[in-house]
Length: 534
Image 1 (cartoon, rainbow, N blue to C red):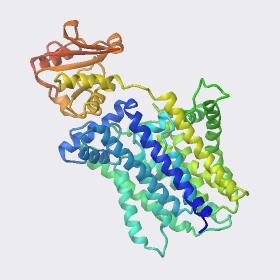
Image 2 (tube, rainbow, N blue to C red):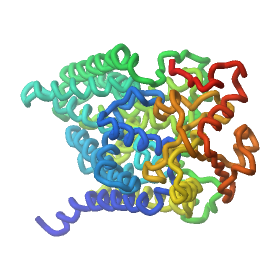
Image 3 (tube, rainbow, N blue to C red):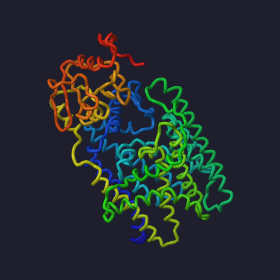
Image 4 (cartoon, rainbow, N blue to C red):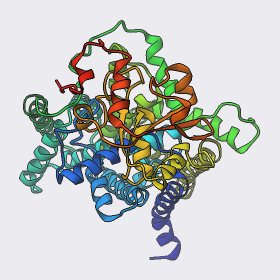
């Protein structure tokens, strides 16, 4: 093989390796500056599960789903290997990034577009915006859904009559049941959109010249098997797991008036998701990147349509373009009709898999351009470089250049011998993470709450209270809006920037004073009896 040809084949893999390295380095260098309570709650849960020696816990308040499809088991492994929670995060982020990339490339290989997928993965794996890094590359909230979806897609595309279909069906059923146990999210992210894509592909296949080896009947059978398996998993979630574990479900959602303006708001959400930045000088690198990101948003929405107009397009390339569109539009419509939801940048997580394959469609469109091979590779590389530049811009503009205040406060609390305390949600789990799990923080929704928050903390915090010396962590904004009733200057032990920490020698005293402001003075709670969990 000629050196130029060998380099040409290795070049996209080189870009992918650089993207993985940049993502890993960026978190290692700046990740502690970007943490928030949602991310920290995942690690607090992982530490809690390690203590229980379990993968799920009835002694934990989950959020809107039972975390059966989540990166938490990987976090558990990281915490088992490293005493530093930051090192455990670095390990976990690397494992998740490699796992997601491998699953995506497996699916793309079954569709016959591996080279284009390598370029696409190099873009997607980067922390190119605050929203993307939170949802996927650093926060990991949707990474396991992407892994499960891509593995399922790859298995569905690989099933045919001649090549070991029975083992593949068995794996597909296992994946489906596992996905369904998490609730309805995999139906939204992959299951229902891919069913729409398969049905449309089946209807169109008879009138379009065939150039691949797709077998639509087997495609529909495999898709149906996967959906039925997910349904079985969902029934397990609904009737076997739901009564035992604490989490909020989507079953109470109802429809709202549909407004097309809400539908179009997702375009704004996509601009923010990709990292569009206002207040930049147009004639500058960041201004140019922002302009190109607007074009990219329209490209991910319209390029799949242009692919479908090519009669010579290979079957599975056509299927991926249809899936990209259905994966985005299905959730757009659902988001618009569900009361209580709105098109925010974070809603992109629900159609992130459709967005990933829409981005892949852009690389497929470049592949099918009637230009030289060298020029096609240059265009693909230029798109990857746009994401590299956007990542650098994100680091420069959006990542703080200093430690979070909770990190300093956690270090001070450790140094002064505190182990237990109280804080509101957006501070509590961060304090635990920054102390590498040494601080046990009872979390309140607000300081007017009657008991600790039934959200992303252990149930034990609502059924018992600590003894001995405790701290109360708050800040000047909370004090101005809703001050804790038990604070006074005589208890103030730490004041830096807007952080205030108060110390109490008797935890029972602070607990009862906290409740005394909002409950009946004759309540048995004031005699020392604690609230029972319903």
